[in-house]
Image 1: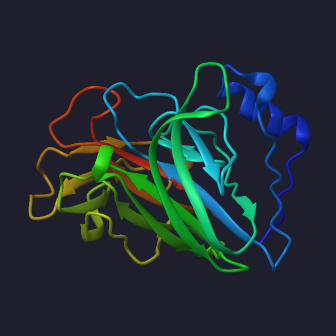
Image 2: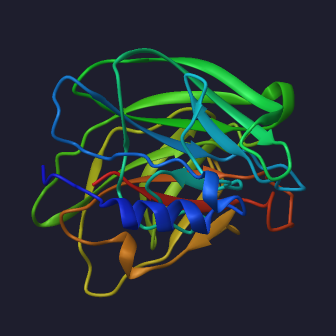
Image 3: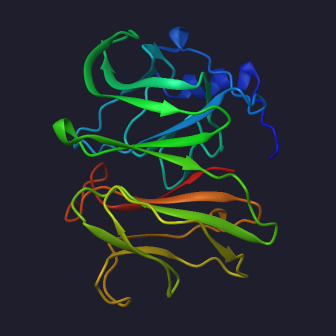
Length: 255
């Protein structure tokens, strides 16, 4: 695995773009070289209608700037509100408290804590904590990521984070690539040869025809590159049409 090192200037810019309180933004040091550390990505998917700015904290320390729903942090992906980097936070292994909160205006102090949970993180591992749904129904699913890849294909895993759809199928073009993934569930990894022309991704409720109207679609050549590992994820709410709450099929970068 290629080591990633981001300099302080780049990180400061990333955080500054996500917050109106630029002087107080923390700096997260991202380094994949320590086998005694653990690495975490937070995929914040809570689809509140007002889509408030929130901050993420680890063990009581703020680690993010202000972000909104559909944002993987610190690295992002495609069809998200995050960056296009495959980065993780470097943390100390063990019990880890994660919280999501709306801060007081122009401060880093939590005002309304929307969600908090404890994660158990092992050394030398990479994880993504997917946070979905809203209010008292908010849940986090911790998934261990495998960053190995095939030189001639793209590698994927599919996760269903759409609260009001019990089971989802994922299509790439007309090909069913992952079937029957339940809410809060995820598939095994699968590889797809890089096509000459990028196909459209689509999510459909399990049991519906492949020709039926999709819950959501997305197309980008960036989602089918060699030497990449992606997590494809479904989010939002079936039946909603507002930008903050409607269904999406999105991608975060693991490698």
